[in-house]
Length: 248
Image (cartoon, rainbow, N blue to C red; front, top):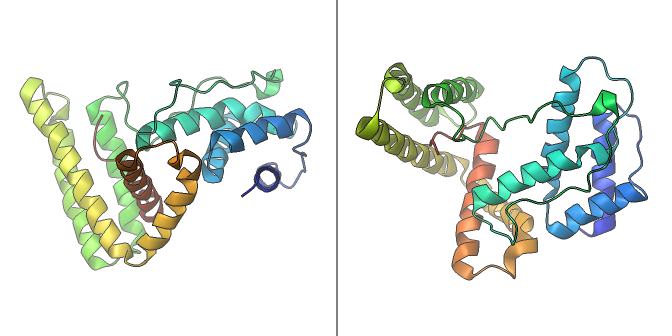
C-alpha cells in the first residue's frame, strides 16, 4: 500500500471511531501519518494505537469534540514499539519519537493504557495469571476451533488456576520453575492453535510478510525468519483470542 492509500485507510478508520464525523488527514496530519507509513507501522498496528487513545478518551466521560489523528500519535508509536519488540525487530533507537503535537485539555491523555496481551516486569505473577485465565475463559466460550482445542484450553486453565493459588508465595527456584512452565504451556497452545487453523495459517503468513515488508531488506535472513514466526504467532493469538501465557 502506498502512502496516499495508507493515509486514506487511516482517515476512514478515524471516521468510524469518531462515529462518522469526518476529520481529514491533510496538511500536518498527513505528514504525521506519512511518517508512520515510512517507518513501517503496519495499518492494524496504527489502528490499535488509535483504539488505545480512544479507550482512554472514553474513560474521561462524554466526548466534547471529534478526535484528530494528531492526538493519537504517541499511542500509535507506543503500540508500534511494543510490536517491534515482541517480534525482535531492533532499530537504531529503542523508542520512536512523536512530533509532540499539542493536545487540547479535554483530549489529553491521563495515563498510558497497558496492553493486556503483554506481560511486563511491573505486573505481578498472580495478576498475570488472573488476566490469562479470564482471556482463556473467553476463548473457551467462543468454541470456534473444535472440541480438541476446547479440551486443551480446559486443561491449561485448570493448571493455571492451580498455579495462581500458589504463585504469590513462590520464591526463588520454585518461582523460576513456574515461569518456565508457563513458557512451555504458551508454546504448546500456540502449536495446537496453528494446527487447528489449518490452511488459514498460510494466509496469516502472507499477512505477516506484508507487515514486515518495510524491514525485510534490512534484516538478516535468520532474524527475519524469527520475526516472521513471531508475527504469525501474534496473528494466531488474535484469530483465536488467546492470551500471552508466558511471563516475561
